[in-house]
Image 1 (tube, rainbow, N blue to C red):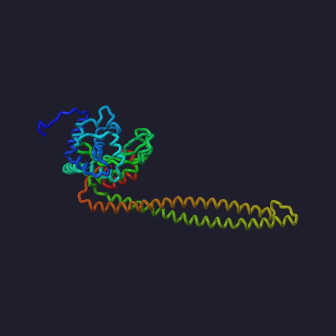
Image 2 (tube, rainbow, N blue to C red):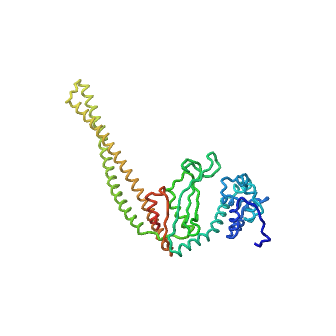
Length: 379
C-alpha cells in the first residue's frame, strides 16, 4: 500500500487488525464469506456477523454482549472492521440472532472452512518436523468450559468437575501438536457434556489428531497379537470353569429334587403313624416309630433347605462365571477386530512416523495405555 493511501485510525484492538490482514492473506475471510447461509440480509450479511463472532473470540471477549457493551466496544472499532474487509460491525444482538438461526449443516460448513484454511499451516509444520526427522509430539486433554448454572438454553450441557468445582457446562476434548515455529498448533476441539470423564476419550483424541495430520505411526500388531493370545488362554480357562460349574449346578439341582421328593413321602408316613397312634391311643415315646418318623421328616426338610442353599450358591457362581466369560468373549472379539483394522492401517501407511502422545493421569487406565502403545505411540 502506498503512503498516500494510508489512513491513520485509532484502535484498542491492534492485534485484531494484524490478524485481519493475515486472515485475508490466507484466504480465510473470502472462504467464510463464500459459505451459503440462508438468512435475510439487512445492514450486514449473515456471513459478516459470523466473521464478527470469530473476531470476538480472537479478541478474548468472554460474553457476546461484550461486542457492544465492553469498555472498548468491538463494533465501534472501524479499524478492525476494515482490516477484516467489512464496512462496519453489527450490534451484538444481530450477531446473536444470526448465530441462533444457523442450522447444524451451516455450522459444520463453517467449521470445514476453518479446517481447510488452516490445513496448509499444519502441513507446513509437519513437513518441517519430518525434514528434521523429529518425532511428532501431541498433547491431549479435556478442559472444562462452564456456562451459567441457571441456563437452560445450552444444548447437551451437564454438570461436571471444572476448575475444582462442580459446574454446568462442557468438557472440550482438545489436541495440539508441538510446533517448531509456533510452539503449539491446535488440531482439534470437540465439545462433550460436562460429566464426560477423561478415561473415555483417549482413543478419540488420537484419532482426531491422525485425521488432521493425515499421519500415523506403524501399528504394533505384534504386541496386540500377544495380548489376543493371552486373552484366548484366559477365555479358555474361564470356559473350562464354566463347564464344570454347569455340571455342578445340574448335580445340585438333581440332589435338591431328590431331597424335595423325600419330604412329602416322609410327611405322609409320619401322618399315617400319627393317625394310627391316635386311633389306638398309644403314647409316642422318644424311641417309638412315630418319634423316629418325625425326626426323619425334620431331617428331610433340613436336607432340602441345605441342598436348596447349595443349588442357589452354585447358580450364583455359574452366573458370575458366565458374565465373566461373556465379557471376555466380547473383549476378544473387539481385540480381533482391532487387529484386523491395524493390519489394514499398516498396509495403507507407506510412510509411518514416530510419535508420542502426552496425556495426564486421568486418561491412564490400563486399557488406554495398552491401546495407545499398540497404536504405535510412545505414551
